[in-house]
Image (cartoon, rainbow, N blue to C red; front, side, top):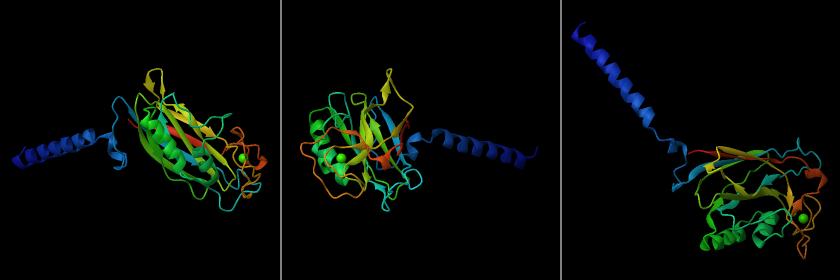
Amino acid sequence: MNVGGVILIVSVVVIALVIGGYYVFIPEESDIPETIVLDAEMGATYELVFTATWSGESHPSDFPSSAHWSGLIGATHNENVIFWDLGGISSDGIKLMAETGGKGDLIKEVETKIAGQNANQVLSGSGISPSPGQARIVFNMSENYPLVTLVSMVAPSPDWFVGVSGLSLYEDENWVDSKEIELFAYDAGTDGGVDYTSVNVETSPRKLISKSDYPALQGSMGKFVFRRLN
Ligand SMILES: [Ca+2]
């Protein structure tokens, strides 16, 4: 073998090692948006994909022309707090979210719980417009705050929303790999409107949060899929 051949072989091997090493050492975090601050002390990082299937095909009766979903809003927290619950009374934050999609009051409620060390962070993301469609957020979980609450308004609607409350991503002393939640419409009990575009009818006192009994809104509206990234 001549010298040129040896140099060629050595070069190929070195390049292969470099390329191999390069791929081996790329951190998995590289596909997480840079805006996410990683603070995963004994924690985990998750993505949530909200897939809305609500459409003129799935819910043909009265399906509104401007069907969309308000921006995702919620929190990571511990079991000392409940931001909403089926059979409970809506807070001002849930009322505002369910009636208008506004996040402000719910953010204040989460911040109060953060100050009391019962919540860790506000979760906030984009909505979906039009529906059907998808939205995605990436967030960190800490072992002291293993629960997720996350909601989005059915829009337009009087006070209807979907979401999860106190969903645990930590089970049997481990972070779960994934969790899929089928979404059904709830009625926040704060507005008596009976169809998508009813005028505002303040419900006072507030009724209990319940599954929507609006005939046009029965069945799955979509799903939340939580998936552990690292
Ligand atoms: Ca209502």
